[in-house]
Structure formats: structure tokens, C-alpha cells
Length: 210
Image 1 (tube, rainbow, N blue to C red):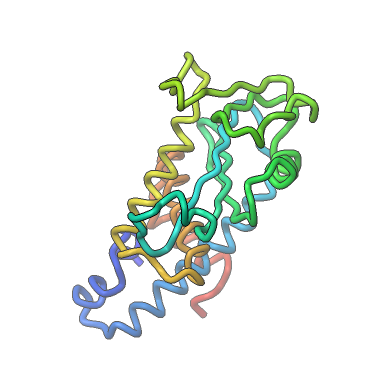
Image 2: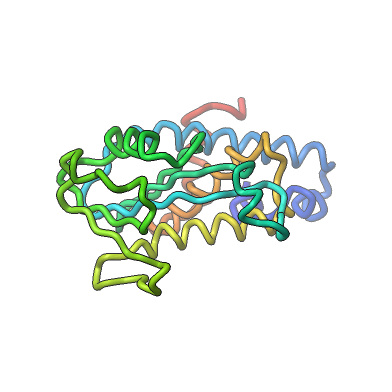
């Protein structure tokens, strides 16, 4: 569990512990399952105060060529981050206004200050009674205007993609559990919490180790 908390691949954990690859892989999958259900429990919390929103594309296998042309078959992820709080993510079918507005209305308090990029699916948030809505236009080299920015949620996106490259990316059917693991680790960093101690609590809570 300590080695997993250090974010080591199962193959390296196997070499350090003299256990078989199958044993370490199975144990890491247990831990990821614990984290997944914990994050699913957490996502029902309504976000308030200052919120950053961002939509992004992920793909388990690195694709450098024709990146934008092939974006439609990447995994679409919508992220919501409460400053000085936590980040929440959700895999979505599309990044249309209908889809994003539904998630925002369900998860974000109407008194919140919302920060987004220029993506036009965010237009109309004022009509949904989100009156404190601000955006930055990256295409105009505008990344921050005082406290109006989405730097934290973009930091999470970069962190998550770096994690996937460290593991040589992951199979598509395992992407969601790795996404939730990245979410958990990033939240521990934001909250200045020890990942190992938090993981021990979750294992006891969900009783998945028997």
C-alpha cells in the first residue's frame, strides 16, 4: 500500500517486494477500486464559492499525428474544481451546452463565482441564474485577469495526462479508474493530506481487503 501510495507502477512494486506481477497488479486494482467508490461518493457534494470548469480530451494511447482530426474518438472529460477545495471529474458523451449545463446545475451552487475558458457551450450560464460568470480567452493569449482564471483545473488536467504517460497510458476500459485515482491524488495534494493515511482509511471503510 505504501508503494502504491508513491504512485509506482505494479511492475516496479513487484520487483521491490519480490511478489509476482499478477499479485501486485491484483492488489493495485483493489486500491483503485476503493478510490473509485470513494470518489463516486464524494461527487454528490454541491460546489460553492469560486469554481473553475474545463472540458478536455483524453486518449489512453498517445496519438501525436492528426491530433485534432481524431479528437472525436478520444475520451471527453469534464472537470469542476473548487478553489481551496477539491476537483471532480465526469466522463461525458459530448461537450455540448446541454450536457455541460446539466452537470453544472446538478453540482454547482447558483451563488458561486464560475470561471471558464472561451468554449461556447458555457454561454447561457447567466440564463441559468449563474450571474457571477467569467471567462478567459486563451486564443487571445489571455490566461488570467486577477482572480479570473482556470489555472488550477488546467493544472489537474496536465497532472493527469503526465500520470498516464508514466504508465505508458492505460487500456480504454481502465481509463475511468485511473482518472478517479488521479482525481484522488490531486485532491490529497490540494488538501495537504497524506495519500497513504487516506488510503488506509478508505480500505477500512469499504472492506475490500477482507
